[in-house]
Image 1 (spheres, one colour):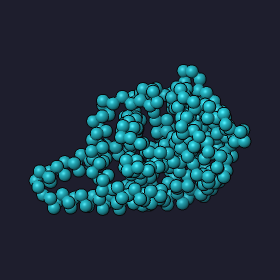
Image 2 (cartoon, rainbow, N blue to C red):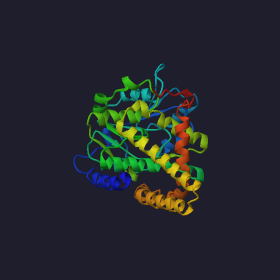
Image 3 (cartoon, rainbow, N blue to C red):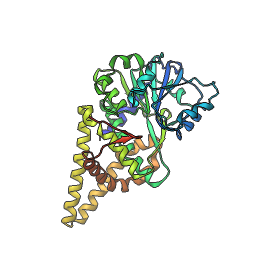
Image 4 (cartoon, helix red, strand yellow):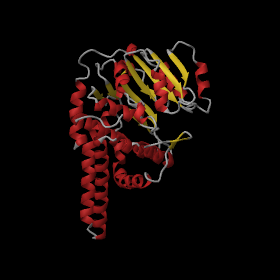
Length: 352
């Protein structure tokens, strides 16, 4: 019900985001850290070339790439406001790369993107419909083509639906650094990277915590015109590794609401599995079918509005398969978390 009723409350909130003094594209600097993104940078640069409106500057920060990422920028003709810098030796990781770029920001707002995203041409026109705030958690949407990619996308969409619902009720519990807009001065005042810099991941979620903990004006937008798009994982191994990286920072984050939601989801899944097991052992087939149908219809009712909002309604056709997969997936992650040592692009990730 959080996702269903909260989504309605959030939609009402978002109608008010256009009231007041608007954000100007010229008041935004975009920071884009990258490491070994030779394959993805060309499509990002191409989407930047197609933008109807531009920000003040794009700052790309090379986080010690070991491929030919830097050669991608040799084709730039100088007409775009792009600056490329190198993170100094001893300053590794996305968190440090962002803060190296932050030293050069002179605009009122900072926007972070990942290097593997693409954006629509009217992105900054949509930004200019937003009024001033300390932070906007903006949508990052997975694109998918194969059956597996569609399935891998499903849990992210439902998680974002819950996050949107929580934003309607109270506040968002996570953000994506692939598309995060914040007031530069507020970032400089509230950033606590000195306390969590040793934890490799979580540049976005820790920053969201800093802002919400200090009662900053944090808003979430589900407007698809403000979305960046990135490809879903193409293999099961990459998919599981990605999810383990994301959940590994939950304990270090020490966000009570985040922990409560994650724990409640796991307990609900465990109860659902136990109930199914009991019905099977008892051979109460009518009860089993009734339970599965009721859950299927409830989830469809709860999540369909959000799927439609982000223009991914077709993926709802996978809901019956997702109902079977998600309990297995949740238990698998719970079992692997204590054993798995997450890594990213050749680096071991510290999560505590």
